Length: 68
Image (cartoon, rainbow, N blue to C red; front, side, top):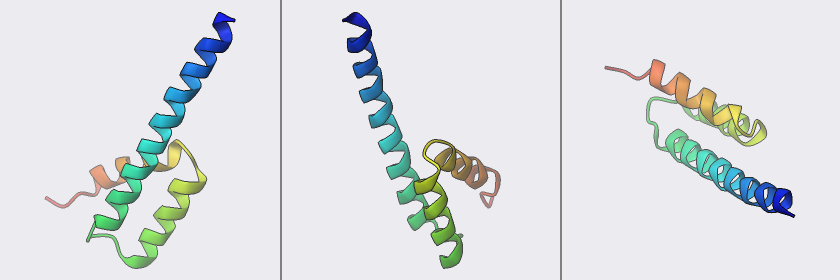
């Protein structure tokens, strides 16, 4: 019984974290003026299809390529 409660709670927290990660990544993609339209579409597909790694890769790429 305790295992199902922990699993359910952990699953809910994981789902909320994933949804926030995807939403913030998509907002960042579409607000970024340095990314052209084709690349925005590609990043959109990557973030939506690859659940956790997609947004993390985008943010890593975005932070490395940020103009100074």
